[in-house]
Structure formats: structure tokens, C-alpha cells
Length: 399
Image 1 (cartoon, rainbow, N blue to C red):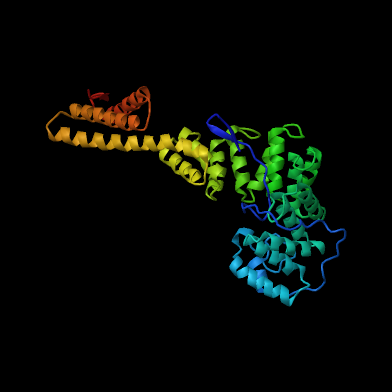
Image 2: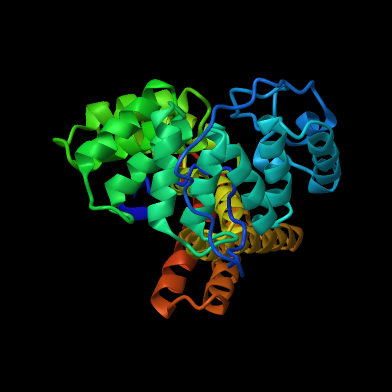
């Protein structure tokens, strides 16, 4: 979420993050009854299934009991994962690991009702990642009616067993008062437990709480510490927040070069907000030479991801770039023509300056600029050409 522009750099307010493994999937409603919390749980079966194709295709990279390195949810190929996991579960029906992974495969295919059935089976036997993912589904209303109380209950189960993502989510739920009374102390407790495990989402939210003075005394230096820990893990959100603090001089000495460094790291990961802020730096010349082409490049990348602020700033820059090209082409063509016609150097350069100004005026008016703004831009273009004219004598411009 973006706030205001201060000293040329937009303040970026860290919003609430859902750290769930299922992101941006369309909400669906279940036609059947919502599964509820089971009154009792049993420990996971001691039977250990060997490494299978199901593990290769659907193991979570966040599952402490995974048999492989695991893959992020958005990288699952459900066409391969579903049959592999169905076969594995049929062969090893007591493996909660494989049951959970079958749930992930179904979820990736947007078959949330089938996913919930598998998650419930694993969660009833105490499989922590399944408890967490059930919380995500209830919080988002995927495959079941949205139920914040159920989401909190499942998150709490996983959080109490030390699962950092659940701790981060339940902390953020208390921070926002989402389905529970707002309680900054409870939020801070869970967020610190997740942050102690290095969870970047928790680190960022804690940074935001200190930056905004939510439940704690406002402390920009403390906010920077949390943002830096997330940024140093390569988290684009954390890098953007840290870069913004350097740009604003909050909690650290103002340092646009350091701001640009962190924003560029996030922007190169495709993080739209960082791309927008980096565009501002180049447009305003904050710690770097003004480079409207570079600014437009970053605005364009952010706008392509739906960033409305970037799109609004891109329009005038595209117009300015077009005007600059028109001025250069018109000025150079007129200069060559005037010199070929035998005009003096000073006369030829003056003709070029006037031609550049007229070209800019036409472009600016076509772009919807006011007469006054277009006239000022045209005058500036003419003056820039005159400044480039050869000098004689003691360096005085040729008139």
C-alpha cells in the first residue's frame, strides 16, 4: 500500500501479508458441510514411506518432514503430481506425508474440496503443514465457506507446534483484528516467535508495527532492524521496505544510493512496488543523475503488473521522451539543411533551436498539455539547442 511522496521518494507502508502456500487462487464454495476441528488427534504414523514420485512433484519446501528439497506451491505441475500422489497414497495409505502432498496436488488444480479431504486426514493425525494449509483455505474461503474462527483455530494448532508460517499468520490476524479482537500484544508474541525462526513475513510486519507505532512506541531504528533481516534473506518485500527507509532517512541516515541498491534488488525480482519507487528515484534524480528513459523503463515494468501509480507517471514520461526525440530529429535536420544552404553557423543553430521548439510544442499539445506547459517545454528545448551551439572568442555563445 502506498502513502505519500516525501522528498521525492514514495513512502511505502507494509500491508498485511498472507503467507499461505495457496495464493491468488479463485475462491470457491463447498456444496457440502464444512469440515470442523476434530476433538482428538493421534500422532503421525511411524510408518515411513520411501521417497516417491509424489515427493518429487508435490513435497512442500516448507515441510520439515519432506523427503526431497520440495517445491513452492506455484511450481507444482498438478498434471504430474495428482496421479503420482494418488498412486503413492494407494500404495502407502498410512503415510500422512503422502496424504498431505496429495492435498497439495489437488489444491494446485483448484480442486479445493478434494484438497480439504486430504488435508483433514493428515491434520487429524497431527501433521502440522496440513493444519496450516487448512487455516489458509478457511481464511480465504477456498472450497469451504470462509470461516475466520476456523482459520484461527487451525493456525493456532500449527503455531503451537512451532510452525513459523502459522505463527506469522495468526500474529497478523491479531494485529488486524481479523475474526478476533485486535490485540497487539498477542500479535507481537506470535510474530516474534516466527521472526526468531527467520520468517520474512513476520519480520516485515514487526518492522511495520515499529514504523507505525502499532502497540509499541514508534521506533524507526527498530523497524529498520527487522526490515534488514528480511531483506538480507533476499525477500523483495523486505528489500523494498529497507530501501524506502534509506530514501526517507527514517531510522538510518538518508542515503539515496543505498535506497537505490535495495530497491533494485527487489525490482530485479519483479516486485512492482520496488520498480515504481526506482522509477521515482530516476525521475527525480535522487542520488543519481536524472534519467527519464530509465524511470520510464521501471514505471513500464510496474505498470505491466497493474501498478496504477506507475501507469499515471508513465504517461507524461512517454510524452517527454517522444518530445525529446522529435526535438532532436527536427533540430538536426534543420541544422544540416541550413548549413547546406550557406547560412552562417550562428544562423543555422538558431534555425535548429526554433525547429526543435516547434517540434516539442506540437508533441506536448497533442499529448493534452496546456498551452502554457507546452510553450515552456518548447522554450526549454530551444534553449538546450542554443546551449549546444559552437562558441567563439572568449567562450561567448554565437548569436
